[in-house]
Image (cartoon, rainbow, N blue to C red; front, top):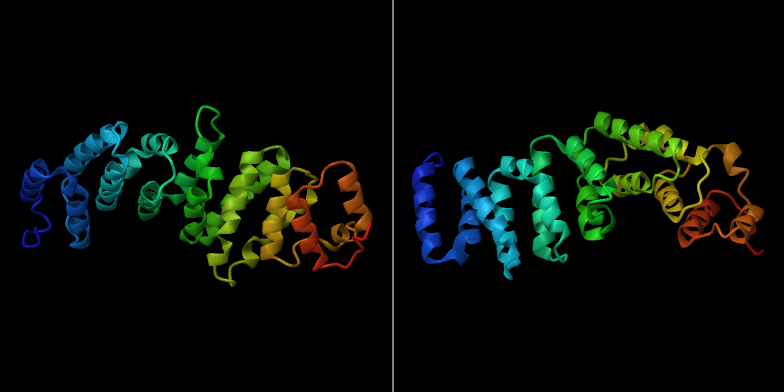
Length: 276
């Protein structure tokens, strides 16, 4: 394989087919070696190979199939992009293993490499909102961390647009828990951004503090914003937060652990008595 031309798809496919016929388990290794040597095979061949591997997910050896699928996605991003929803449906049914997370990461990378991460994030959000689908890609840390870690793939303009859309949705309807989750996941990736561009988004995110919400998810979102910006809350709103505010929240059963995380963060900005 190492001595064949990168464009000699036919010979590569013949050799691959012969070797896999003798020893099926070597397929993931061969694909990995092809990727390392910067060689690939035709999209049609890889598409057929993907379909075979995906059909084999019903068997007991799913780890081998996921390994193969992950390597196919690495060789041809179009296969991943064209089969995104199919893969998400299948991944959602699996126990979370390193191989499953690796495949999810490879799928996300397909869209990033195609410069379609914004479109993928819209698909990810829609999928998570669909009551007929699993929301695991939004709620399971192993999955949503992949989304967060790739936030720097977005341009400043794209990120500004995304944040504006999400914040506007939340302001319009504070009960949009999925949207709150989505924004929190995006903010979790801010630690990988340059400090130079963070001021670009402060005004947009400050609007979150203009609306009143009491859900645990909403307070968690506020906490994430406060972790990024110390001076994001307008002075007049900060002045309204005191010990009685906390006491009333507890009395009305509106205080969650996320509420207290946010309050303790606020105490770093303003001193007030919590002894009551």
